[in-house]
Every structure is written in structure tokens, then in C-alpha cells.
Length: 235
Ligand SMILES: O=C[C@H](O)[C@H](O)[C@H](O)COP(=O)(O)O
Image (tube, rainbow, N blue to C red; front, top):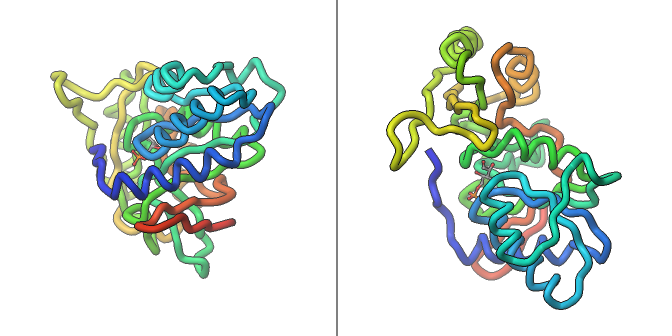
């Protein structure tokens, strides 16, 4: 499921530009994935130069990267607030005429449940992406984190909502992907999604769905790394 498409240089530009928004004293949400990894490394270099920040990781991966980068870590329930969250996306609606402008699909790395907690807690949430993530309409499969004992019944319910569910298989392990929270992931193909907000509401109401990968009205900006710079979308 997880593809590492897009240019690595574009991802680096986006991640490093987002890291420049981190100010002294900030609590920063540290997203997951190959694009955010560039931001985490850049924040680590700034910490080496004396920047005072605390990071809240959103996954095992981002925690490991932050530890390697030397970023002091904290927890969501140990802080008064999160100043800024930086996180990647699998798709971003890039049509300013669309009601869904800035809506995202996340969870290609199965981290969307913790990501949503941290990203929605932040005063400002900046998405980092390369141009391959931009689309007029969301159309990738929507990842659902589901309880292991409920994955079949949840898949049935999602089918009733018009989705085609597939249990995500692990690579280099027999059986399914197991999330950092001990749950499974069902990827649901809905085709082009005209009303991500409505679908997000229906998925949230579906028992057994721990969290879905639609992030609607959450992002404040997207930094899009390009071949020669960074374009900023503000919502
Ligand atoms: O679960 C993973 C996350 O939602 C990632 O932020 C998303 O998959 C984007 O990752 P990448 O920057 O590697 O494309």
C-alpha cells in the first residue's frame, strides 16, 4: 500500500521549509513518513544549534527519528498545547474552487490515528508534500484503523457505505499490518470522493472504526516542494 513516490528533493525542500516555522519554546507535533522525516532531521539540526523545542511523535517511526535527531520528546497529555504540527499526506485536494480544498487522505504508513490526535491538537497544522500528492478530487483508498476482533464486521459496514475494503497485508511478515496501537488497517476504495466531509462523518459513526484517514478542515497550510523551490497553499 505505502508507495514512496515523488521526488526526494521535493520532499526535502517541503520538509525543511516547514521546519523553519518552528520557533524557540515550541511544542511541535512530529508527523510520520518520508516527507516529514526531512522536517524532523532539520529540527534536530536546529536543536543542535540551540533551539529549545519539545516534540510529540505520532508513530514509532517518528519517535525513533526524533531520538536520533536529538529532539527532546514529550506527550500530548503532558503539555498545555501544541504550537505547530508538521505532517505528510497521501493526497491533498488542490482545487481552490472546491469545498474540500486542503482536505487530505493520510494513513499510507498506518499512522493516521495518532497523527489525527496530534495534528488536530495543534494551533497550526502544516502539511508537507511533493506535487505527486496534489489532486482535484480525493480518489485513493481511505485507510481505516480497525479493531482486530471487528475487522470483518467493520468491512461489511464499510461496504454498506459504498466502499470496497481490503485488509492491508504486511510486507516481510505473514498476515496483516499491525499498527502502533495493535490494530489492523482496512483500505477502502470509494472511487472519487465528492464529499469527503460527509464520508468522514459516516466513517466516524461506524462502530469498529478506531480512526479513518480523511482529514477534512484540519490543515492550515500545505508546503509543496517542487523542482526548484516550495509553493505554499494556505486554507
Ligand atoms: O501513515 C502515514 C502518514 O499519514 C504519512 O504522513 C503519509 O502516508 C505520507 O507519507 P510520505 O510523506 O512518506 O508520502
